[in-house]
Length: 468
Image (cartoon, rainbow, N blue to C red):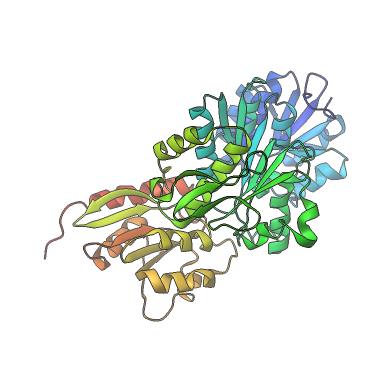
């Protein structure tokens, strides 16, 4: 039954709530384990034809929300997709019937035989998760990567053997409804304003992130960023008791508690046990990623890997070979000495700041989209320092415009093609046109990836020299 790790079998009757990628993967895995699976979704019927058909192919039966009372009495559990909040009326109905509601990553953990490395943070999760996976594979560790990075975690844990490793990107949404999820190694990269359209406060958002280490114990490891004020507050003092695992800390400068840090432009490791002499891992100059924020991401990935017993020489080679992921400070075109840089995965103001700081030369920024109730004033200073002009798109254009400092030219665009054309006309040789929206994509695009692809297509049209 569902009360113990390794369950979910023919005795269970499970409702999957939400038919996105995670929900469909849950349907497939749970049916494969013999459970009776129902699926439901609150989206309009016109948007559900394909997912309902896909769920049916996996052996799940769709139940419209209006018909949910028909199956509630027989359910043993519900599995919640990350896009569906716990405050949803549908979820409340299931909880009122005393049905346990579990996140997909909770179910993934319970059926997993392999140790899990879990990565969360406001920004940098996907890059760090991919880098850790790459480093483990470089060390010849059989490794699967899943979660918020793009493929459902449950699909990976369902087939993982005990001698493999799972590296999981997990979001605050996914952590909200865990119960026993316990990674062998967990890391929080940073916590800055985001998703405040879902959380009532920063404290509530941070608490969701902190659930990543809630079930860890002395045999597990927590890796934290001492440079981040919210994460670093867990290192010592009144909040240190909250981390039940062995804690290792990294930072971009040597401090009393940093096990991994930068000194004289070299990444240096101070082993927490054994020979205490500092060991140089690699020069910062060998990191093939742009920006100081990516130095922090590399520090996190290295310290996680060191905690798992991977040797420094392997790690140095692995970092040097790693390449930026799509839509994360990715140069997609160049025309007349102007670089077009896709950072479409930037969905909060803090990510915009990090992207601007990573650029060399002047920047024409393309920003905007669907606001997540974050404060765009947080990016004002960086825009004033690094951007010569800003082109705004989407629903949040007026809100962002109010945060742009005087002296920075602001234009509005009706489409991505229009935005790229305007930005190109404002840029000069040596400048960068940077798409770093600081917002969700769903007002104009189906995903951040689709937004970035549209930018790249428009940017490549600008390769033709401009005359006149």
